[in-house]
Amino acid sequence: DTAVSQTPKYLVTQMGNDKSIKCEQNLGHDTMYWYKQDSKKFLKIMFSYNNKELIINETVPNRFSPKSPDKAHLNLHINSLELGDSAVYFCASRLSLTGSGANVLTFGAGSRLTVL
Amino acid sequence: AQSVTQLGSHVSVSEGALVLLRCNYSSSVPPYLFWYVQYPNQGLQLLLKYTTGATLVKGINGFEAEFKKSETSFHLTKPSAHMSDAAEYFCAVSGSGGGADGLTFGKGTHLIIQP
Image (tube, rainbow over all chains, first blue to last red; front, side, top):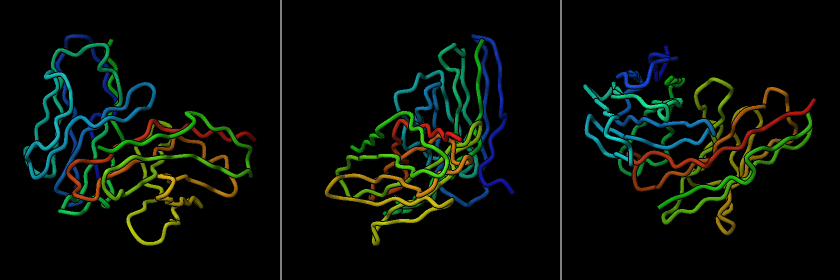
């Protein structure tokens, strides 16, 4: 069973469209994240949710809207896609009790978004 | 605030040679440190982590790393490179206060193995 699964794996779309990426984890973790990996492989956190509550919201255009219907799911919706949104988006999850910074982030396989 | 610096965006070694990937961190709290590996077109996989205790930690695939507080370093090594080690390697730091803030990653080092 896949621990953190993302769909779709590949997404090719036109500028101006709206698209969503879905993420699900079956690890019983309480915190989920979205990371963006750019063409230079740099990984930057976008959002984190703890028990469905938004914890981190980095400087990301408000065209990006995360939604967490329950603590096992974290979806990413992107409005009015731009060329610069082309990247690989990784979902990750972790158990985040107090003092648990040692806990490992488990990553999904990534969703490669290409905006034409 | 935390940060990670990985020296060398690309490192090339011959098959069978020593692999050394450098990582320096900055953290205002005792750090937890991680190395992840990313194979082409795949997600990130944990290689090893340092939390507390022994400063030399062993990971998967023959990799190990040593935490040196005085040097704020956590370099990754492997005695003998294999072709299958070719990948992107990321060093990351997490604060000890809690996990909801995720990991801060370095910019990655692309490891090239020459036959």
